[in-house]
Image 1 (cartoon, rainbow, N blue to C red):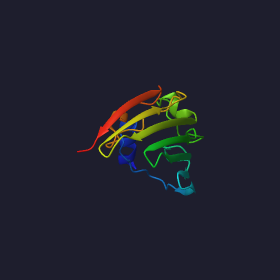
Image 2 (image 1 turned 60 degrees about the vertical axis):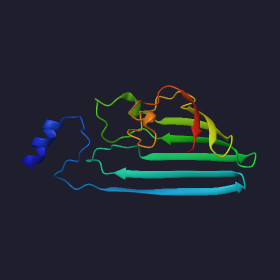
Image 3 (image 1 turned 180 degrees about the horizontal axis):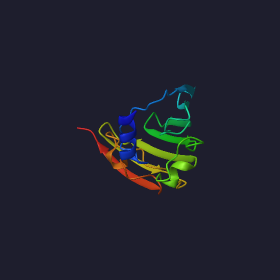
Image 4 (image 1 turned 120 degrees about the horizontal axis):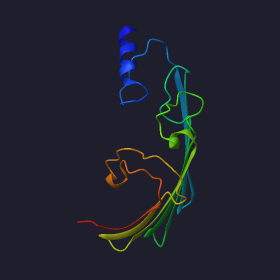
Length: 168
């Protein structure tokens, strides 16, 4: 207990990304439901709902409720793809929320993204992406090695990308 108290005093209300031993029991439980449906040959729908609960004496570092909805449609012999996705995060409800946290974490979040992708030929494609269409104050997702342009920049502003992909 003395060591735990010393570490907690040094950490204060900030969190450095490490887990600290605590001197009491903690309960964490949750569930995730994933649903995929091919509505037609060229329309795919998917959704995911997850819930997590932690006991009162544990810091909550993620929202209790998360909902993801995704729709993909393929047209023109699968050359044209239209993708729309929506993400909902509940607020950091009724458990520990540090006063040093940004207000963005204290309220529910809605994020809508869309993409149009066209395969010009076997080697060349073009796309148009719009992130955070309604400009909700959505915190950054963190490091995304597959998409470094989305890492730690936040998503509070609408961002539109026009891209060209060439395969060798």
